[in-house]
Structures are given as structure tokens and as C-alpha cells.
Length: 347
Image (cartoon, rainbow, N blue to C red; front, top):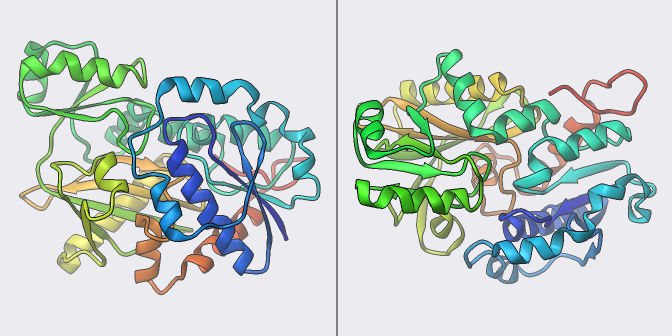
């Protein structure tokens, strides 16, 4: 099967996406597919798989500067996707993008319009998961525990009255990989953190900080995978801890009681479904000191290098990285077909 792997793009998560896409392409080739890597920033072909050390070096730095991303945005593949010669004969698109148009539903809508089967969630689910404000409102309506929040700009008085005071977490409402995220411990730090988040997104969120254990739950098909516990060197699982060797430790399955494991997995499935996601996702949570899980957000296109959290969880369930990629492709091909098109899919 010929599969186009879209990666790179122009979001702040470009480097993470390139690593994800190359690993996916490698796995698909090992499975006997013709995997064509395409940079969604400009439509250029991306070469074959690289050594794992080279892949890791691509993301062992801070996110690209805004100027770099603006320069890349000039010839986005998504503007002429249907006419791309490299997509001729393609039977499916594996979306390996993170953030921006690749994860917020715009690319998914375009693929729907041209009738091209693609991996992951549809336009609606992608948009809901990418917008943290809307996602949190849906969590509350569904009875899913999520930290209380305010929308910036906001002052310290509101933080004290609505969130119980400092510390708080300030983050963009439309980014991933903890890009632009800060833990704020005093009123003096608040405005600077809001400005930092606003540089990536004009609508930052100020959220109550929940101390506790970092957990991630992958969803594959209709099942929750084993829970991963992350022990970052920093107070939160930030960009540096995610993509720098030795900055985090992982344990999977997480050392939780059977009852707690079941609760966390059930919550992950509920969050996945309330956001109308499909095929796979990763739900990020914290378990507080009273063993109560708090849902922060859901990634509709989680990282997919061999050492990312979702593949770690799949491996604990006996699913190899190559099999995981194969299953995700197969789910794309059996998605419900909109009338008059090739497979497209529900939200």
C-alpha cells in the first residue's frame, strides 16, 4: 500500500513532528508499505529513516523561533494537496503533524473534501481537542474532573479568588508539547508568563496547579492502553523534559491500585469520546495527593517516535511499534464513509 506520511509543517512543534513522521515511515516500510514522507510546510519529499540518535537530536532543542515558522509557511502543501504529484496513487495519508493546521481539523477537512483516507480523528474531534478552552468546557459538562481556569488577561486578584491563589499554570490554548507553558508562583511572575504564552497563542489559559503524579493514558480503537507514569526532573512535564534524554523517567504499567487504574482508564475513554475522537489519542492527567485523577487535555495526534508515551503504552500491552502504526492505518481504512466519497470519517 502506498501511504503518504505528512510531517514537519509550520507549527511550533515542527521538530517533534519530523521525528514522529520519520519513525512512522520507517515502521510502515518495515511492514511492507511504500511510505512517502512529505513535509507539509512546502510539499518537499523527506528522505528515508535516520538513525535513532539523529532523530533524537532533531528535538533536543527549544521550539523553532516564530521567524523560522513564518518563512516556512510560504508554500504549504495543504494549499494544493489534491494536485500534489507525490500523492498520486496514494491509498491513505498518515498524519504525523503536531499543532497548527495539521492537528486542529483544517487538514482533516481538506482530506475529507478530496476523499482521501487519513489516520486519526476527523475535523470536529481534532478541532475540539486542539482548543483547550472548548475541551475543558466539555469535560466539565461531562463530569470529567479538570483544573479550574481563567482566560487571560487576568490579574492576581482574580487568581486568588477564583483559583485559590498561586501557584498556577499559564499556557496557550491552542498549542501542544507544553510549548509556552509556565508554572507561576507569584503575582509578579504572572504578566510575564501570560505574555510568553500569548506569543504562541492570543488566548492563554491560567489554570490551577495540581500537585501530584503525572500520568498518560493512550487510547487505541475502543480500548484504553496501560497507564504510563512520568517522573520529570522539572515540576511539570515540560518541553525540555519531554525531548531531552535523561530529563524524565517512565514506568508502565504505572504502579497504581487496580481500582485506581480502572478509574483512570475509564476517565481516559470518557474524555476521548466526549471530544469525538477516533482511532487513537493520548489523555494527559495528574493524580493528586488524594488519588483523584484530573484531566488536563487530550492529544488527538500524540507523539509517535518509538520512545513516545503512546508507543510505550502499546508495548506494555504487547503491541510493537510497527503493529501500532499498522493498526492506526487499518482504522483509517474502515472508518465510516461520508456519502459519495472514499473513507473520511466521523468527528
